[in-house]
Amino acid sequence: MRLEIVDVGPRDGLQNEDETLSPQTRAELCDRLAAAGVPRVEAASFVNPKKVPQMAGAEEVVTGIQRHPGTVYAGLVLNEKGYERAVEAGVDEVRYAFPVTETFAKRNQNTTVADATELSGRLVERARLDGVRVSITLSAAFGCPFEGRVEPEVVLDIAERVGAAKPDEIVLADTIGVGVPKGVRELVGGILSSGVTVGCHFHDTRNTGMANAIAAVEAGATVLDASVGGTGGCPFAPQATGNIATEDLVYLLHGMGHETGIDLDALIECAQWLTDQLGKELPGQVHKAGNFEPVAG
Image 1 (cartoon, rainbow, N blue to C red):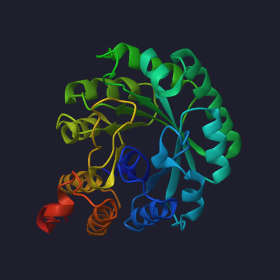
Image 2: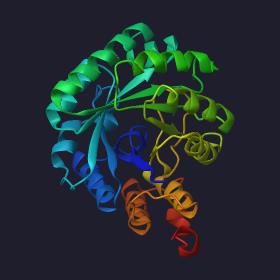
Image 3: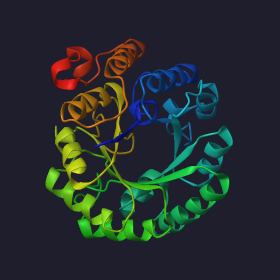
Image 4: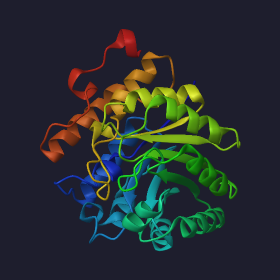
């Protein structure tokens, strides 16, 4: 099966790091990921830089990228102003983070679930007119840092309402890393039944990220988010830790016979480069252990 990997390292991977990389360095990270064959790169977050200083200079990141043919460059947005900034900067895709609980909506975006539902439909309409892809990411879909367990019926109801606007895809985000394979299969299967493309975004907070990714693929998801080196975490979600590492995910998927179009050796070099830029060891494993051709070839 051909699977599409979205590397969110330049955005989700870096937004919670102590070290703030310059827009130029973040643009270079995007270039390196694209050169490794990553088909989609989440390049920046168009949010208030006072609240997330690591994402300051989002426009500079996007304009500084050396565009690689065939690579889709995305920007994360939380509101309409962010959407406008992203489109003006020249992204190919807008990814709207939709909070599925009222408390997370208030704390993360100062909105409500009802208002987010209305906004998501409006952003899909605007994206069609502006000629950009649009993805709706359901944040905290498996559990909320403030309200706890999120019932699957709640997520599926939101997905149905959001899906009515026909976004390019709906992404289930395990923002705080509490999901398990059984719940992943249930949600992916439930959303797929409506005919929309389903993606998944997993964090490895409780060491379930890879198991969840495989469960998602087995249930029919064709898009997976991951972060080079395993960096990342939501700054507004207490105890959230890194995303699943892109190089670890690609190694696993290739070993299982799936295609990604990614050069794993080049991706490993990218993770090693990012390690040097951040000046610390990153959570991912394959960039330290290396490729193993009989399995990953």
